Image 1 (cartoon, rainbow, N blue to C red):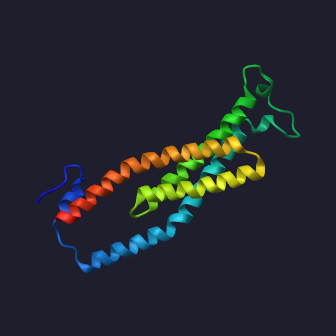
Image 2 (image 1 turned 180 degrees about the vertical axis):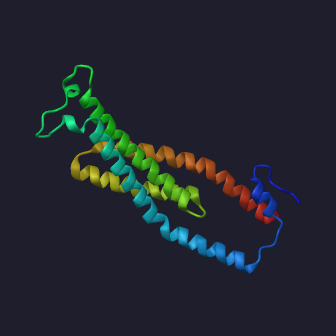
Image 3 (image 1 turned 120 degrees about the horizontal axis):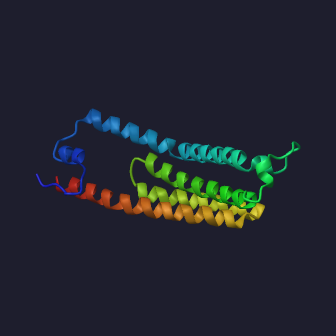
Length: 173
């Protein structure tokens, strides 16, 4: 049996074996479930990163800004760059949310992972641009779009070659 050298061992061992109908039906059901869970899982991942970013911001610099209580001593220290940390944590959170959104969408998708990454990027970029237009957070939207594009490129480069190799092995067997 001819095998593509880049295929994982599991795929090489399964390449020439016929599939029975029950395993094919189970794979179809799991694929349908994964397609149905694609959007909710990406949105849930975005919310998790959003709340983690908020907590990180609150822990690092949140007590230095806008509270009725007196700020901690380190907020007034010359060595503590609170404005820089505030901006850096906002940009970090925005970029991380874009990366996680694209990655989770690609991981949850049962097939066409590269295409799903680009569709997730398009949806996320559209929402980021609309939110930036309404709030004036253009730099944050730019960071989100750039981080999403870089992630989609990485996902595409790692999945398109693998998907083509799998298709070739299926046509040859």
